[in-house]
Each structure stands twice: as structure tokens, then as C-alpha cells.
Image (tube, rainbow over the protein chains, first blue to last red):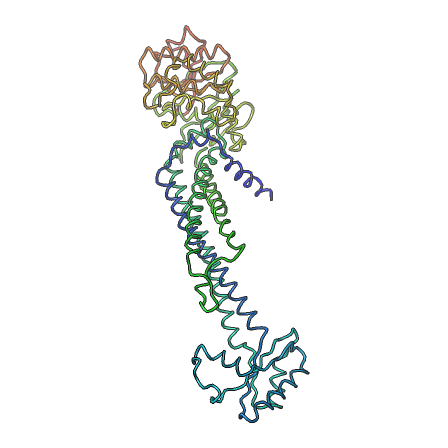
Length: 303
Length: 225
């Protein structure tokens, strides 16, 4: 904490600024604009990485929750036995712990399910379709126990608790989310490296300024502040521009739709639109830390 | 005020100064002379803390220079005005800002001090050149501006390294008069110069002690002048 406090104080003083100290350092030319450009580009990418992370998080939740609390029992039986088997299964389910609701889908519901794939005019009533029972699970639902009981009592019934589908989808979403956060981290590291390089170039070009400041009695913090303020503000400006452009680009992506797949959901939802607003202050803080470190290292070369 | 005791300084293995003793008492005026490469600038840098001794002790206002941290050395430099051989200006700033630099970095750049600054610039004859950039100034003007910057914080000690090195005789005399006047005002003055004529010209103006630096050590050189 004792080391953090002076850095925080330095950040505040840097933001407040000292016009005299600013004048002491001559304009740094291309290094400053390199900082603006780098911060803008990295922030633009950061918006997408953030959107990716949030979208994959939502996706994992949706897939996980949507499929986790529901199971289906498929009953393959001759047409004249199907109703009896469904009734038997519903009786079993009525006495099974962990089953919140159990409902056999009627013919119209099954037709509606198949219609998008097979069309409305197919004679579905003539096809040997299995009957489906939808189960809504409670917390203590025991899929393995139910599966064994169905095997024993209604051999033609198959319980599908969606684990086979759910696990790889949720894993994929989780990995995409990790990729998004890793991309954000890499963006921060690359940006810090670029700002450091630009700051070092500016400091090297202004070695004489630093020497003179030391000779006339400037403390290190005074000499460093002029550089850190300039680079911090430029990085914040670039980040604001890049973030704004990134948000506009995200806003113009197709909107999320149920049938639209994953990519149409790449965006921000609700209050999450505020999150990119954290990027410019974060970038400014990274630039401040990188420039301050570079400045103190440069100052150490002068007694 | 400033005292060097058994001071040595080496650049790598090359010992430039050895076992050197020097005391600058309050209000004294010293000339430091010697051949080029004898170590005059190095000795001055030891006196204002830009270098720290390889051996011995440099006592600055009662503090061992080696014991001062970087902030401590910064504060010490505000009490020691220095006129550098090459003036050490920031070329992108006008003269008035260059002279005000010590005030700016010490947070004492108040309107009152600015008024004093303008008086000071008038005193050194640069009241009409305040907005000129250093490259636009003549050698004499640069040296007088450097002198103004050196005394703007009202330091106890004034150190000048070849202040007349690049200026004509008339301007050298004028600068010498300013240094003598500062000494009469109570400042301790140490001037490094290879110009013996300047030292002779100072005799009627100040009571100065002349030291010669040669062979890594100091010796009194008053008699030969």
C-alpha cells in the first residue's frame, strides 16, 4: 500500500497537470502520435475482445442453463402400444423425485417441431415417429437412476438429459471466453510495450532536457511528470477514439436472434454497453505506469 | 560551506584527482585555474554534486554528498547556483523561462519572484531580450543569462565554469564585475578559468584566492599572478 499511494497521487497530479512542467518538455513529434494511434488501435481491438468475452459468457450460460434443466424421454414403440407406454412412463415420472413437471408432447407439438426441417405438408401422421415426453428437472433429479428404471420397466424408452450436447458446447463457449480475456490481456501488454517504446524514444530525444532539469534542482518526480502527463493524456485520447469506433462497429453488427447463431450475438447487452467505457481509463493507467517507469529509468542515468 | 577532504575522482581506472583538499568558506571568492584536462570541470561537478567522489568526502553545506539521495541532491542544487561552460539552456523556451527554470522546478515561481526575475534580467543587461530563444543570443548574453539563472534562487554558493570562455574581453570584464558584485553581496564564488588575464583583472574588484589544479592536486597560485 505504501508503494501504491505515491503512484496514485502521481496519477492524480498528472491528470491535474502543471502547465509550466508541460512547457519544459518540447513537443515530441511522431512519438506522441504513435502513442495516440497505438492506443486507438488497441482499444478498438479491446472492444471486440471484450464483446467476444461477454458474448461467449452469455452463450455458455444460455446453453448451460437452457439444456441443463430439461430432459427428454423418447418412446419408440408400435403405434398401438405408444399411448400405453407414454402413460406408464408418466406414472413412473409422477413418483420420481427430482421431476418438477413431465408432459407428453401431442401430435401438433411434434409436428410443429419438425415443420422447419420437413415442411408443413408432409404426412407426419404416417411416419413412425417416436413419442416425446418433456421433463423439467428439479435440483435432486437423478438421470442415471431414472434411466435404469425406464430400462427395466419400459425398454423402448430412452432418457436424454442433453449432457452429450451440453458439455462440449459449454466447454467450447468457456474456451472462447478464455480466449477473449487472453486477447484483452495481450492487448494490454502490447499497448504497454508500444507506449514504453514511444516514451523511451521521447526521453532519449530529450536527454538534454532531463539533464538540465536535474542540474537546476528538479526532483525526479517533476521531470517525470511532464512526460507521463503527455503520454497518459495522448493514450487516453487515442483509447477514447478507438473505443468509440469499436462500439459503433459493434452496434452495426447484426442483432442477436434465436436462430441467428453465435456471431449475431457478438455484442453488448443492456448495462454491458457501459463496460467499454472502462477501456480509456484503463489504457491511461497502463500508459501512465509504462511512461513513469521509463522516465524514472531515464532519469537514473543522470546524477 | 563546501569542503573537500582527501577527495579523489577516477574515470574508470584513470585517476584524475587524488587526495584533494579544498574549503570554500562563506563569502569567499576563489579562482580555479590549470591546464586543459587537469580536471577543473570535474572538481566543480564534485562541488555541486553532479559527480560523487571516488574517495574522500565532499561536504555540501554540512552534508556528505554521498549520503544525499536524489531528492536531497535536488534540494541541495537549489542552494548552489551554477554557470555551466555551455550554459545548458532549453532552446525551445524563451530566455525568461530558461532563467525561471529553477523557480519552476522548486515550485516557487510566484508573481513576486517573477518581478525579481525581471529586475535580475535588467541587472545583467538582458531586460530587453526576455522573449529571445537561446540560439538567438550572443555568447555574452548567454553567459549573463546563465548567471541570472544561477542566482535566481538566491543561492549561498555560485560556481562558474569558464564563464568567459566564448566571449570578448569587454564582455568578460562585465561578467567579472557581476560576479564580484555578487561576492560583495555575500555569495561564496568559485570560478574555473584558464584565462589568467581575467584573474589579474579581478584583483582590484575582489579579494580572491587563486588555486591551480595540476597533477591531480591543488596548489596556491596567487604569487605568480
